[in-house]
Amino acid sequence: MPVREYAESLRAELAVRFPDNNEWVADTIYLGGGTPSRLGGSGVARVLDVLRERITCSEHAELTIEANPEDITRSAAEWVRAGVNRLSIGSQSFDDAVLAWMHRTHDAAAIARAVGAARDAGIDNISLDLIFALPRALERSWASDLDSALALEPEHLSLYGLTIEPHTPLGRSHGRGEVLESPDERYEEEFLFAHERLCAAGMEHYEVSNFGRPGRWSRHNSAYWTGAPYAGVGPSAHEFDGGARRWNAPAYVAWQQRLERGDDPMESSEVLSADNRIAEEVYLGLRTQRGLRLDVRESARAEPWIAAGWATLDPEGTLRLTPLGWLRLDALAADLTLVRSHS
Image (cartoon, rainbow, N blue to C red; front, side, top):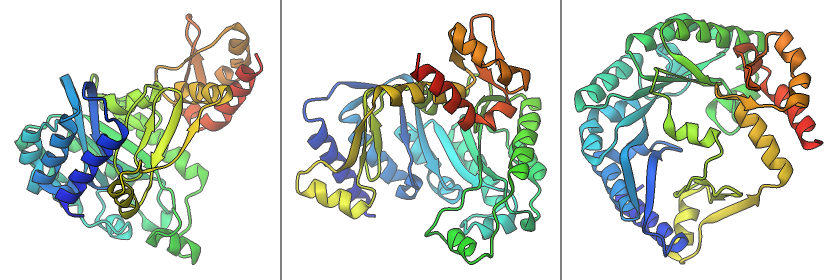
C-alpha cells in the first residue's frame, strides 16, 4: 500500500471517530495485525507522527512494532529515531525446511541478523515468536528451536501451537490431505517441554503463550488480559471501551473507501452482557499468572483441579493454573463461569 495514502487514511479515521479528542495519554502503542514493518523506516515514522497528533506518550511508554526479520535490517535505526523501543519478530522457527514449508520469506540466518541489527540500533526489548506442534513428518526439533531462540537472548518469547486456517496455502494442503495436524499429545508434550526449558533459562511463564524476563512482560498485551480499555485504528482493528467491542472493515480497500466518504469504517460491534463480562473475567484471569480471585463456594468447586495438579490456591483465595491446567483452560474456565453466573 502507498505509505502516504495509508497515513492519511489513519488521520481521517481519527478525525471521523474522535473529532473532539486531542488529549489522550498512552502507556503503550502497538503497530501490528499484519506486517507493519513493510511500511519501512520512513513509513512507520509517518504513521507515528499521525498518532502523535492525537496522543501523548507517557514517560517510558512501550512502543512495539511487529516485524519480519528482513525488514529489521533495513529499517531498525529509523524506527528507533521515531520512538520504537520494542520489536516483536515473526521468527516462527530456526529450521530452514520448516520456514520454507510455512512459506516464510526469511531463513534462520536472517533472524540472527535481524536481532543483531535491532541491538545495534539501540532496541533492548525484543520478542521472538515460535510455532510448535508441527506435523511430525517435518522432523523439526523443538528443542533445537528453543535453544536457538535462547542463544539470541531475547527479552520475551511468544509460543503458539500450529493452527491451520482455510484459504491459505497450508489450509489448502490440509484440505487435500497432504498435511495432518499434530495430535493433542504432541501439543501437550511440546508445551510442557517449552515451559521447563524456558523457565530453567530464567524466563517467567506469565501467560499461556508468553514468557518474559523479569520486568519484560509485554505491557501492551498484559493490558488486554486485565480487561483494560484500548483504542484501535486501521483495517481490521479491534477496540474495547470497557463495555463494548467494535472492529473495523478487514479489507484495506473497504476501510479506505469508507473513510473517503467520511464514514466510520466500523464493520460491526457488540455490547458485552453481564454473562459475557463474567466469562471474560474468568477466562482472562485464568490464562495469566496473576490468577483469579475466588469466593469460598468457588474455592470448594476448584478443589478437584487443585488435587489433579491443574491449579494452586493461595491463602488469599487466588486461583492460578499450572501449565497442565493451562492445557485444559477452556474446560476449566467454562466450569467456573457457570458457577459464577448462577451465584
